[in-house]
Length: 361
Image 1 (tube, rainbow, N blue to C red):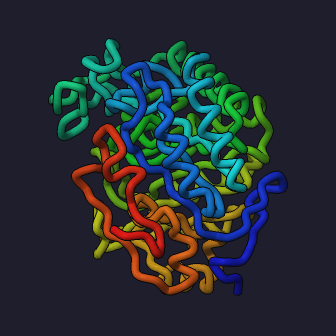
Image 2 (cartoon, helix red, strand yellow; image 1 turned 180 degrees about the vertical axis):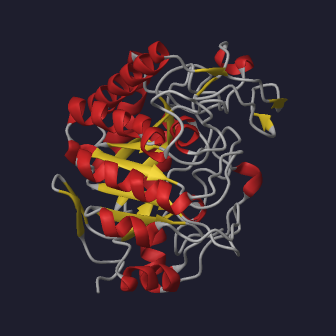
């Protein structure tokens, strides 16, 4: 069985020197206009030893981006803002893909200046982030066929812009209760048209997004993230294994070469669940590479590779606190602990100031 430190061809066009990926991590250091800032180049280049960096979730449109300080990829200024980031990562020998994000109903008009869009007019639980603090979620409007066509166009434009900005590819954000996940799950999708009802209809939007992006930039540059097990942001499904096995089969037909799955367990430190992982069932219908994510340490990550389901493992919060995570894991060195209070603040603290091995804390 391969080691975490062995290379892998994630796609025919994307060679990785190791199987330790940096998971997508929202950090909130962009401008109010969703333009990346220079400090983001420093942050990502510090972590360029990862087999692959998956960027923080990045909005495909103003409608779909409601997180304060998150970046976008729908206009020229944002493309230009991302270029120094990809250049800095490539200069250090790294590889980086851009995660494309439409938040669906998980936004607030105080940020987007538009009513939220969702598959059904169902208000999610909890509160939305805004620049003035948290606010109760608003009831979204149900997407029309014209809305769906427009959002597909937004995904296509965002994918083209990502390549123009220098990324090695993109990842479709289909996880965590955002727009694509809202279409997938029965709790958030009450539609009666061809996008709702049976599983075959609910996976349609995911398939169409993947097909559109593949037509724009080629399958070799495309991956997908999903969160099959557990409720997230009010999205759940009683038949999650059948649902996500069907989703994996659709992505296989489209020719998607890799997927990343966030699979927490009962002891997870972030949204624990007793629902069984769907990855074994998805593996039977998906011939591409599978990346697993959630709470992994060196030993548990290697154990998942040894089982033969996962081809690589993505690490999230440990990469926030350890810019040299690959080196630390290889050496069996102690890991820095992350500071939750600085996850989404502006400025360098808790962002680019975590020490590397041999540096004073």
